[in-house]
Length: 298
Ligand SMILES: [Zn+2]
Image 1 (cartoon, rainbow, N blue to C red):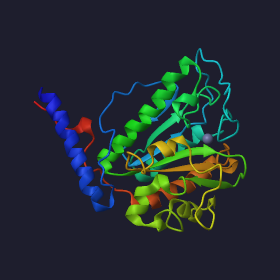
Image 2: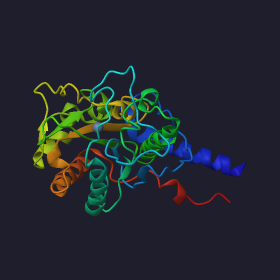
Image 3: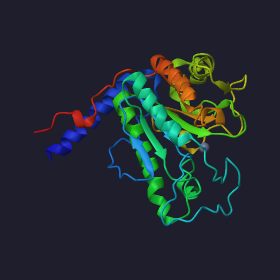
């Protein structure tokens, strides 16, 4: 049973390291959902395991059909962007993957990402499973999206103690603007506990840094987020108010950030903001080496 004890000891080490670094400002409760599950890759979900405490998610940009599945009908569900909605966030699939490559070029290491290849007509990963899909064939890609995202959050938590999840979306109401969704700060609870309100609102916040990088951002004077863009199921599930120590921010980007001809300039601005945010608030080095690099137990 040596391998089992070895695995236990690794997790214990990780949990100890996480707890040690989290210090007295973190919640008293230890992180839940700790453990390793074997991920089942799905061709309709693009994913990259990273080396930075940064996770990108893009659930609504895919164009692919789900083989054998009919489109969702949403019978009985309220209609609209916050309810049952099947419109794509055009360009966000490419945006996420190109942003990951640009971050790697700038920072020298890969971020994590999970990107939907499937179309929202079949699956909406930004909804709980009960209303996210209707066809049985859609269950596996939906589960793959969330199991991968959960695994990456656990891994970042265990390796770095904390991290940043950016959930990338598109909106059609203001083409030059990015709206923030954190449930008015709830999904970045640990960030605020650790660094104060200025890390969430104002010039040193992620959106303040986006603005400094040349993006037009929307925030109310009282810090409240625009109704309808306050952050959906993904940031509500993986944000730092819950079992993970990952601060999660939803970005609702206008078309000027997502169209093919403007994407590169937009990504350059995001990279500047993410780099600045990382230097202010994210750990530069992992607390522990990735598990596969550990010496074998012999
Ligand atoms: Zn969306």
